Length: 467
Image (cartoon, rainbow, N blue to C red; front, side, top):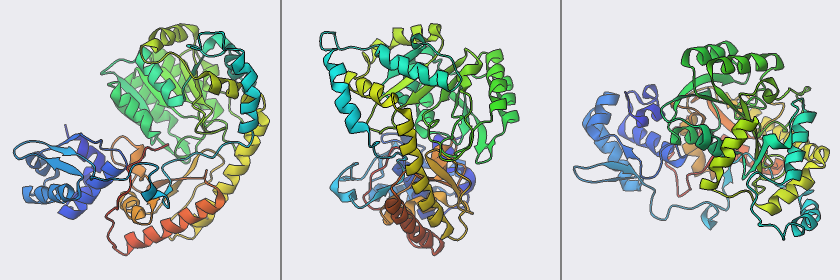
């Protein structure tokens, strides 16, 4: 079995690579979080054997990384991932002029302030309670359940738990039902932090492909039947990062197959409401069977600072979730829940804001992509981002070069389980048009650097979460 380092690098991507190129590849993995601080890397001898390179090449590559502060080495001991001293932290002054394309999220809805003011009497009425809200405010659970019903999945408030965001919801689900050592089916590509959560809970990942044209549903169903995974994590609406939407007719088939093999489907709906001009509204997958556990969030339709998410599941699963939750948190902030009640009472205003902002952001990215030779942007009817084809497998090199242009840009492999999809980039369509235009100009300059063979050694920029 190969090392995780080579899995992330992609053995074919570094075949015959010189020491400097290999060091750049490892540095890229560290900067975008695919290798974590403190993680142990293979020994020089082991890596040389795995890559079929001379030990001196590996020694040189590790030496370059150590000189820049990206690894620490003990004589006769281990090599571990580090970050350079003084490495800039998110939000520090040294990155004020950087544009961060690792975050696909809009600024707040214009109605957030008014909703906050309207929420205060509701919050004041709760002062006589303990203040803990393990399942969530009844009125907010009612509002979320009503939204499911409006979309075609009849739901009661008892089938809803309010959480501190969607990723918190995923971790709560895995804590309650997870089984270490079992398989988990995941899309390739997908949301990186979901992959990390599944890894942390001890799952072995089994990928199924998704592209801008959608899912290979035959492969997905056959993988469910052959692998019989314990859980499957899917993003069926405006898939992150490809933007694809799973057709209505395929949803019940997948749910039925999963139910027949005993697979829990964890369906991520955080991008469901991000419609620009898709032209149709799919029925939630949760309407097709009790084995579907759905997570959603306010962060993409209202504001990333609104740490409000939810879980929709059958009541037996809800009971298990409630039994586990106090072991790591005692509920969700009441003020944010009160604000969410007010925001959900006017969904048309939220969706109108989302549609306008995404339309503007998409237009700016389209114009920028059109000016970069070899790049192509697929139809993007909604969602957070465009899944750009850069025409050649240089995504990681471009990500490194972009940092010199003060552009933080996760490469395509960041969204995969094993260092593939080097031809792809996820470009958010969530930035204001002028900011997106600036980002695309910097991307074009970085691409010129890559094609011209310019150095792509990064400066002092932070490694970033991908949102």
